[in-house]
Image (cartoon, rainbow, N blue to C red):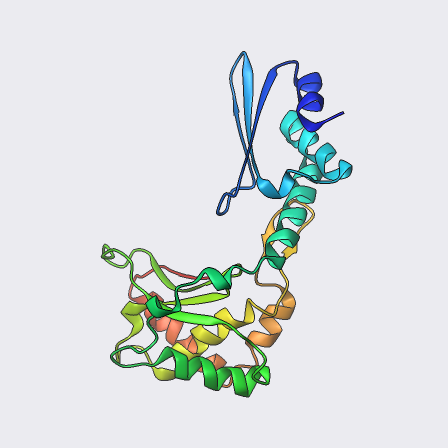
Length: 223
């Protein structure tokens, strides 16, 4: 029995299934009295029977274990995808006014990772912050193997060691596996991640600078 038929039998409703290569969504449900629309990432298009059963349980019961199974399956899928060849590297900007990200990345790669990482890095700019109520230091995109560092930090108000710390932090995401907890939460900063993070030579100084930064009333996001 296919997934659509299973869902219709359990829900007693007409089911419309949509498979697409969503950027981050892997399952979304829209329901009314006559039908239910289920949007699934294409990774589930030919998924095994136990995953299909988890989809059915989640859609019909919002089953916690089923949610965890789907998250784990999706996480494993995304961790294996490499779309870095799709990057237009000519558009990557690494040399800033004060800091050269490529040089920082290369030095960290040699010192901490035996020069084994093959990642991309660039500055990124966001729309003007409103009183810095939300500040993103850096992000890491696994499928593109791309580190992005906030261009607003390309100034001498940010110590050189802190920029290095943020780049090192994002590099760690490429070597530390994410975990899915029993309640289905995605755990990015695992115990292993935090252990390796503390190996950064200026770890304590970087955290001290963060505290100073936060005292200025600026919330931040460090992915």
